[in-house]
Length: 357
Image (cartoon, one colour):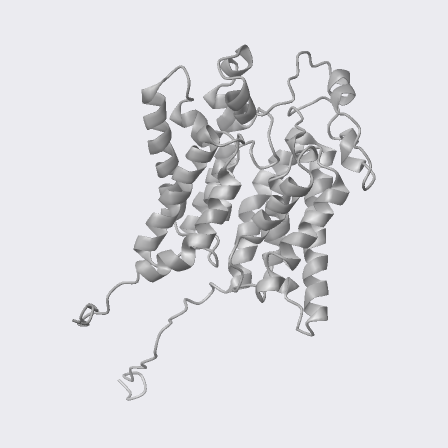
C-alpha cells in the first residue's frame, strides 16, 4: 500500500454530503410537488393550471428583478423561487384572480425573501408571507371556494380567475349552477365545521373524501395521499427532516383528540383535523423549510409540536376556520429562540452558572 493511499485527510466541520446542494434539494422538492399540482389541475381544471403558472412565473420574475436591482448574479438556477411560487399557488382557492396571485408572488419574493438578504437569510417562509399578505389585502376573494371535479373544468375558467384588477370579481354561482350541482354551500370542510357544526353538510364529509381529495379547498388542500407520498420521497432522499411532519401532525392529533374526547358532539375527530385544510401541505412542504426551522434535534421536536398545537387552538378557538399559516409563521418567529435554548452542551464543557454575588 502506497503512502498516498494511507493518508488520512482531516477537515473541520461542517461536512457537506456530496449531491445535497441547494439546487439539488429544491429541484427534488419540485419533483415531489408535481403530483400534487397535477391533481389540483385535474380537480379544478384550467383555473388551477393558470394560477400555478402565474404564481411560479411572478416569483421567478421578481427573483430576477431583485437580483438585478442588487447587482447580484441570478439565483433562478437554485429553484427556490420556483418552489415558493408553486407553494403559494397551492395555498390559494381555485377561483382566485390571477392578478392577485401575481401580486402575492411579488410579495413572497420581495418582502419574504429579498428584504432579508435572499435565500438562507429569510426569517419566515416566503410563500406564507405572500399568502398572509393576500389574506389581509383581499379577505373576500380568498374565501371564495369552488367544488372539485366540475364537468368541463379543463376547458373553462372559473369566472373570477380572469377578473380585472381592482374590479369586483364575477360570482361563481352561475359557474357552479351550469355544472348541475344543487345545494352548493360555497364552504370548505373547515368552514362547515367552524360555522355550521352538526349540519347535514358536515355529516356528508368523510375521512376518505378528505384523504383522497374530493372536497372543496385550496389547490393544495385536496389530496393528502399525494402530499404524504411526496414527503416520503424527500425523506427517503434525506432531503427533509422527518421529525417536523411527524411532530406537527402528532401534536395536532394529540390535542384534537383531547378536545374530541371532551365533547364528541362539538369537536371534530382527530382524523378530520389531520386531513382537512392545509395541515398536510404545511407539515410536509412548509414547516420543513430548512432556513426557517430549527437546526437542533430537540429544537426540531419543540418547533413542530408547537406548530401542531397552535394549529388546533386557532382552528377551534380562534375567529378563523384555518390556522396552519399563522401557526407556521409563529413557529418561524420562535426558531431563533428555540435554537438558542436547545443548543447541546459541548462534550467536556461545564454548564454556565450565575456568578455569586
